[in-house]
Length: 255
Length: 225
Image 1 (cartoon, each protein chain N blue to C red):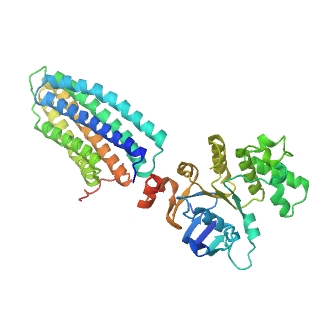
Image 2: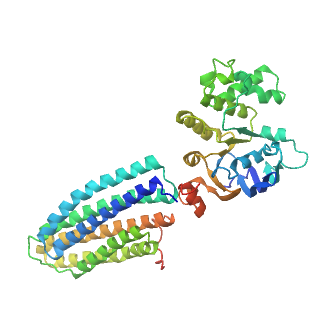
């Protein structure tokens, strides 16, 4: 059977905060409908890396990035490419759930669609319902869609943010430590959701929880001091890592 | 660098398994002594050791479960614990085979020796070598030695086949030695099984050290340091 083509390809990506280089010549590729986990000690560049993938990094004053990031054949750093359009294609869920405080549950999910120009109530309703279902939140909120998004629990708010990101049907969903502020039950729900969501989209997740990376991802990249030390099948990387530095990190001998 | 909690647990686990290995070697030695030197006391020894080994079997598995649940080990730590679980099982089975040999010897000692099988002594020495060195390979993480143990298994299998043929030939000539012959065949069969368990331990050692799974693969050339 032929392997599917890469959905996202990163080649020789470098990033800086002012004079400080945060990423050094990163190259890796992501197949469609997979989960890729990024692990590594704090400050190793994994969050910077995901923020480069949807051009959020350049929003930080003084921050720059250089290299090729190709999504479905299009270089997202190419001339004339609109970062806002890129962020619609490459969604993001952050460590801390950040629903729009003034908006209802329904409007939170519909926000991206409205920005994209969708106005018809029936279409909005259909997509909001589908997104909440995909985010495994529908049953819990279907009777209170007009309540504020911030009235939900932490775990529910995070799933609301996932539903909001899913509403615009992004081919890629980035997650930056999405469960680090959640209790084990909410974490388990999000992990279950990630496994379910990869049927629809492709996920790149930053996590400090090695067991989480091992549980949910197909491939794992180990970042250290702005470089990728090892990138490979998760089942291999966590049982027989090729690099001594990976072995030392995942067995807790440094970091 | 400070030691991890897991390091203490793994060290205890290794020591516990090495202790178990000591029992296994003594049980096999006694089982072989029982028929080879016609020593009745050795039979009793094997049965006593079996009780201790069974206790250790359960205790070591429980230690492994505790480490897996509380430490969530990865990479070489994970491979070591998985190997200990398997080696622990292999050792318990080895002692079961030693008990079988002791039981066969018990019958064998009741009658005068009517069959001489020189190869059985040599086979015993080979099996003891395999057991000792599979354990040694585990203790020292010695992958080349583990490969050597795997290769010795063919020699043990060859002894077993030769002994089977030899004893069957003698039985055909004198059916009166049938029961004694069958006992010796069963001893050879159990020794061969102990060799198989030693091979499995050596394969687990290779997995622990290198992550390579050589089970069910064609025999490899010995790896020299």
